[in-house]
Image (tube, rainbow, N blue to C red; front, side, top):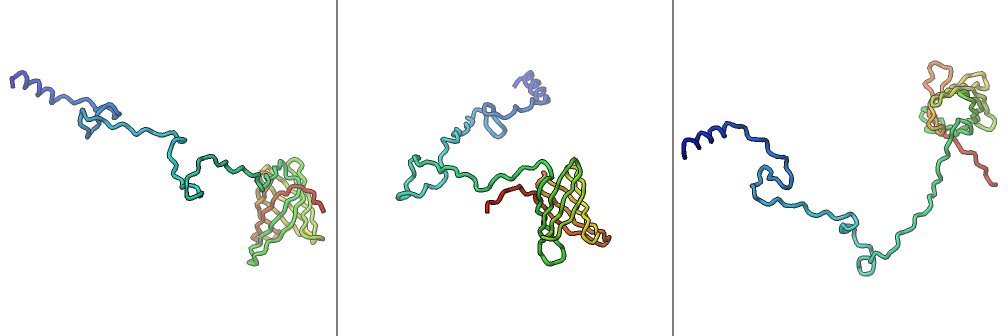
Length: 194
């Protein structure tokens, strides 16, 4: 080796090498020898051309179907679409769920009329138990005040979802009353053929 070559090697060893190129299919990556062919990716099959992994349909002697079997027709849904309500007007089926340990749900109905943010109507709890109520509704929260037969005051308050479901608490004027939870469902008016 000559002196000029040694000096150029010394200078080259002091120079920082350039950063390695980003790995791709055409450039050697760390751990790959330069000149080694890079394996190409396996060809991807279109979803329709992919082999089936499902078991063969049950048929004669377990043979695969030729594909000429028609697909089953979709049947109409047995479940009707839920009614869409735009106001609180109408009949609400109320389910009172007392926390007294009996586990019994008490059913009743609210007949509601909405005018702006005011609500009024009748709460029917039995054949002879009908009480008038007044209240407010701001689009989500409601508060109904019911005057009972013995001039006792009951309050139903809570929130309504999409004018179709209520969740709330029934309370009395007694400050010790923890309340009775209830839910209510808006019912579509239907004529019953008898």
